[in-house]
Image (cartoon, rainbow, N blue to C red):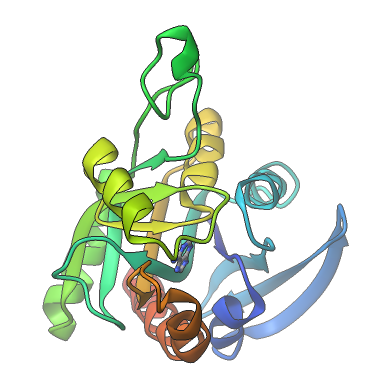
Length: 229
Ligand code: ADE
């Protein structure tokens, strides 16, 4: 069983790499991939670079080239739901693309023909995450994550995403990974720790909390691996 773990930025995967043994590094399609062992599990780790296109490319390479059979994403997100504070964890139950818009043709936001507005996360991985949270007494919220090629630092846009998709958090890669995994029938799990509230302070907060929130997310992913061993 080979497990892919991806982030979007170096800060999101560095804490994961620090737990790994026998790391081998490969370059594929202009990106670096790390094959490694964690307590007997085979893993492949990479950061994609920011945004949906790079995230799709990396998820595809992890599945097609590295033969990953499950994919876990670890990183940070902006909070939409007021209950989510900086450092809190959210696991996506389903994901959507908030910036996908062909409403001019009568379609709903987030939809293109032969696609779907929401992609559901794998139920078994979500169950495993809830077990980990319970055992470790960690608060893990579940909810809808909205993805788009925009850093949101704007209350109006944030409210629109909340109202249109019922989203709890937003980021820039999750739904792209979900589309790829869904197409290849690879179970996936998207975890995010909150770095900001997608408001006018978001840029400042993101820079301030990227590292600490990335570590919170990565540590939870490691606990999930511990349970898979
Ligand atoms: N990831 C973390 N915070 C974000 C924000 N405010 N907008 C988009 N992606 C994010």
